Length: 416
Ligand code: AMP
Ligand code: GLY
Image (cartoon, rainbow, N blue to C red; front, side, top):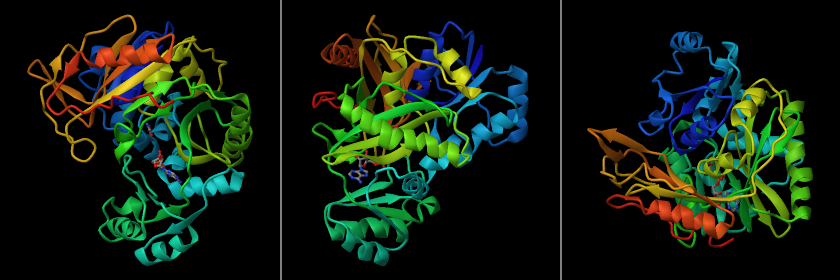
């Protein structure tokens, strides 16, 4: 089968790599891809908003399946456009992608489906935010409605900090018009789990559970980022798993079907496990980045086959390897606020062992030299029969490259 992967980051490189190891896949294309991805896939620069160019492109290559990586494409309706052109596509419809594209839509969906989630108020100005805050206990959680590339959540320990966040959002329009409204919600204490499923809106398959590390620095300090590292699979006790399935996952899938929202893809359920049970923090309409980097290699099977069936609305029973995975994100100087691009990467990016390798998240090659070209630059991936071995492999891999100001956490997986 001939595959097309849309996107350009570490997640998309991981998808390309998973397809490379799929016996059913004969040809892999990517758009836009990257210099790193072009080592394993044929890269094209297609403007997905140019309907004519997209139609000509898919007609020329006759893809058997397209996998859409980034949320922005889904929210812009790329999977609908591809399906209208007759191309089997893994990715929810634009309507369903609002589960990620609008936090207010997602909350309304959860309320309708009876899914446990933090109490909330919708706010759109500073005065209302401060008034609504009376109903909640600190720290205050203010979440911009629209897509904000991981920058839309403000955790505010005090009212003055909440006021400053609301002013940034509503008056200075720091995140633009898509974030003209916001949710103020009750802080949920507990620990987070990334619970990802594949679903066709009727059935679902649970992917290995993983844990992301969102804060920039060791000990969960510093600003929130897109994710600095992941370990998985996590094993949780059966009672908790049953609770998550019955109270959250099954009602989510049922309500997707019941609302007539076309869904063929990954539903990422961000859970907080609180002392009074699991609650939903967020939905994402796609694989997590870097969660995908540890989940994809764990399939004991053929991702090409699984994706191609899902793109036609059919589920496949999945089996998983009995291995542990770790992914350590190596980020640019200045990440997440202001990543420094163009810095030369020293070391051997082709270095690998039977249990570790690099994925390219934000690199470029200029004049034969690899340079930083994004916030998250490289992913060092490791595997092993224990979590300790997986982490050792990933950190060993990470030592094979460095650059000026490189940022990396040294405590991925240490807390679990
Ligand atoms: P989100 O973009 O919704 O995933 O939020 C980013 C991060 O903020 C989450 O991964 C949590 O660590 C934190 N967060 C979001 N909502 C809450 C909440 N209600 N209570 C506690 N932490 C939260
Ligand atoms: N790693 C978090 C996310 O992909 O949203």
